[in-house]
Amino acid sequence: WLAGSGKEPSSTAASRPRRTVAVQADLSGSGKELGTSVVHGVRLAAEQHNARTDRRFDLALTVLDDGGDAGRADEAARRLVADGRVCAVIGPTSDATALAARDRYKKALLPMMTAWAGSDALYAAVDTENPTSSVFQLRPSDSAMGAPLARCLTSLRPARRVFLVEDQAAPDYSWLIAHNLVNPPPHGTVTRHQVATGTGDFGPAVAAALAAHAQAVVYCGESPRRAAACARALQAAGFTGTPAATEAVLTPEFLRAAGTAAEGWVFSATFVDPARLTTAAGFVRSFKKRYGVRSVDRGAAEAYDALGLLAQVLATTGTGPADRGTLTHRLRTASYRGITRTYAFRAPTGEVEEEPGLFLWRVEHGTPLFLGQYQQAKL
Image (cartoon, rainbow, N blue to C red; front, side, top):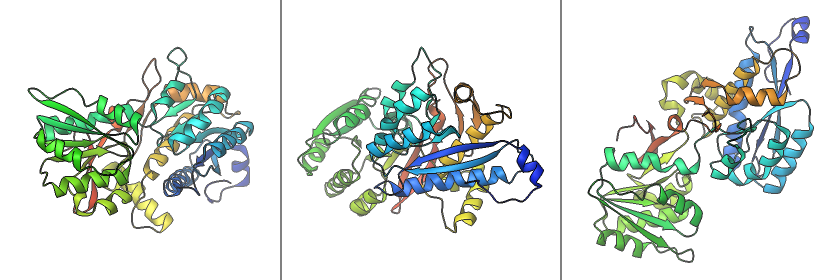
């Protein structure tokens, strides 16, 4: 469908080219809240674009629900690749679905733009010898998630003794986060402790942390429920240092399960609270009015930026059919100042510039508080 409903002379509308953008998201599975938020962000950006009288092309959207399922994601990618009208895809919205769809999009040179899949395996799709790959991971990968925590524990909440809880329920993810935090601070120590998959008791890990006189404890896994168990154990043991984790944990499930034990937890993340960014003030007002909500849900601002980046590049492709290969190349060399941050890609690898997209959050009075870009954040 064509986003927007502004009226104009039929001759003008007929002479203007139409660019079709697809959104592939989980709209019916466990990630449907994020998927719906992504669709809302893209739709608002498209409507605002089509309301501009100086636009060089119209934007039309097509939305496919992959249900968060890898098989459905692959089928959605097959359909979109076969649709010659589609010039780019925003999404998918999870690691599993992005990895399932990646190879089809890459082979077809159809740009796949995801700001929600963090797997480092997606970067494997960006061939260093062929950086024109059509896979665009607009957010920093999981391997970068340790940087905000490292700054927090060295500059914002200095801790000479750091204790890393590696959750074997997610061994690869836990190893990745711990690996990026394993270097001790000056004159300090880092202790690593594994918690087995089959237990939900984090008491022994917390006892080991206290025995090591830890000043900071980092839960390195990705389970909100198990992180909450760690938080409750820390609270019960009277831990007074800094507890921390990554964005995989920062969910309503963690807040509910941890209760008061969530207070003071610090998180590294790749998403923002647009309500706390002056650059996003207009977006926030428009989003609330458009959807009749009191706040902007997670993922919408990044989706809005994804379409903004795409529209900026599409404006350089002329009035003829949008060639996917040309669009891929121009996206890879583009720089775009969005409402959340500036987007650019490294030469020659084609990977996104990570530092502008890494942020810190902290739980205060039971509510996550966005602190800003990690190098500028204050606690």
